[in-house]
Image 1 (cartoon, rainbow, N blue to C red):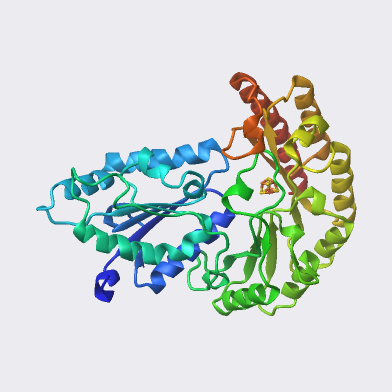
Image 2: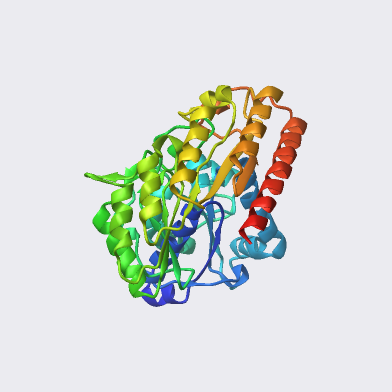
Length: 407
Ligand code: SF4
């Protein structure tokens, strides 16, 4: 693609899913800006439309398909079809891409489901997007020729990457002027039986301390004062002999950085020493997100979580004793395969006892590749709904009480 051609291209990016995806979207926007693209906020003006997707639950994937459907209705995708089938018409044919976890999960099958999509890029391949767009723009001049072009001829998919180059973590695109997300580790090796992350984002890899500190300093030089450290399992961080506590202590000393937060911690990697680091840090927000997932030992075992309900309770007791007044939030899944009424009552009881400040409660949905997919999804939909509603109501009451006390 000629440089002056690129300069006129506008990219619209729609983000779905977790904070890790938010940061990945910033990374993609920064890489595209570097290549001369402009980021725009109206998909109707865009030459390139990118969906950065999430596969954590079926619902998250459904939202992406329905957004593509909505674009069809508003004419964005129709415009693409019209121009493709009537080359005599002039105008821009938008290039459409699905990137992130869904792309990794479904690879070229994406194009069977939605022939309007031109490229699919997995989370470990996002550095290749500028080159892919350049290749697609060149292809556009030669193809597709209606009738003699098999579905895949004009498509590109890069979904097999294992490791992303560290250089992609730049400081040249932040959505927020004062707050930045900072990835400290990628992937996860815990293989919780319901979770797709180890399959779509690979095994746990830790970024080097010096690269993390450099990125933090670069962000601060641009006026960022608050940072949220990201990883699927931040408290398992290890680089050489520096663990998560060591990393926090180093970040704590950076001038200009006023506040540090982090997501997500795993109970099996949390201990009193970690809580003391939270207590002693000048800049860490006194808050811990510690996913419980279930209060039943039987279900925790089936989930491969690596702790019992009793151990979880002891852990949060220790957290509250050490980090006085610290906030505690959690994630819970209801309706996991094999969850009986008795198992659910144990979760209900534990949530009642734990008194989280807030909890995100999800209904189980089977995910591709996972161990839980081999288990019968045997909790009736109506029971999942009921349990979800009951737990939400309980947690709402607890959160309201806690918030009233804090006022
Ligand atoms: S710890 Fe478990 S739930 Fe969290 S990302 Fe890893 S496999 Fe998924």
